[in-house]
Image (tube, rainbow, N blue to C red; front, side, top):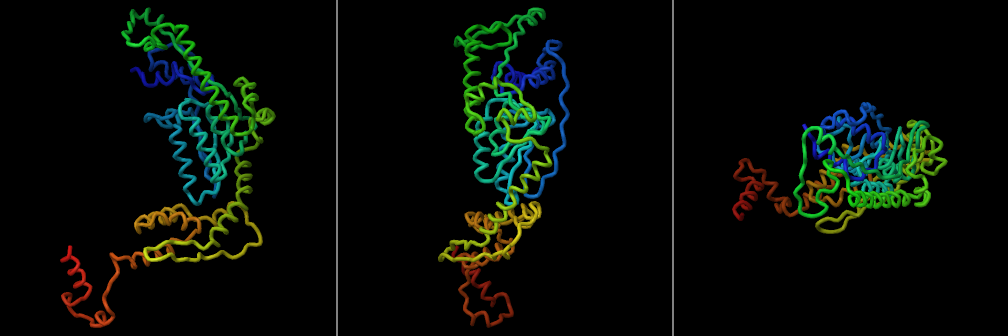
Length: 402
């Protein structure tokens, strides 16, 4: 069975991927493209388990070959989509129990389409919550474009990063077609419609066109990584898409430090502790103004006891942040009450769910659809039958009006 949609994503298009990994992918997919025996054989690397998150730190795995969309071929195929990474990033930003995000990168890179937009999103995310990255064990090409977008980039001692370059492959299988007794005759409208077809040798004009696109994407790659502030565009070009490992990556300016995964988690927790405590304490101390249907009411939030010492990072993050389930419940309550704009205020102030529910119920009770205009005298009558119940009478009266 042939897979033309996959072939179209591998041949004749520029890729931001480490060349040995490209050979692995081609060797695995060759039989499915009808190219048995034409490419070197290699085995897919096995997947690694993901470490449990440290409290307050969301670990976002970036493992495997990167593509814009997986087209239904998820992690089993060794692919990870930019869309999936973006969803994970957005979830971590929205989760109030997350104080910082660590990108756990082990990827040879992948497709060019979508990578620069995602890198920009990571930069934007780092302005909301600290975003760090660790090359664990590789962050090549497109994966480096993402890792370099983090505000701090760490490599393990054996990790490799770099490969800041672009590659495009064209396969000419016309010789194999001839041996198989096949001859392809393209009928086209438009002089370039058959450019880069695998059933014919590449023309000089088609090669120049593909080279121009590779150069264009290379410029985008260089400019994107240079904007992250570690190296200038000229310095990045001078690497000539080279690979750098461990200390050499730091010496070259492509990474900030060498450390283990666990040490990086501990360092990030230490970094987050004062920021988290101060941010939450300030939020709780604020008087949040909540608009109502009648007037503006100032509702002071409960202030925490003053702290003379900053506790250990994991404990501080655990104790000072609202849990994910509570945050979701607060958002749902605000949505049901018709005041979704209040969600951010409640979350920022870490308002307990019970308090949120009580406040919103009181607000709804003041609304015109619930407000009762029955007099105390009428309620004091203590009717013994439903027909004499003033609440029932009021409901029937309203039903009659409708």
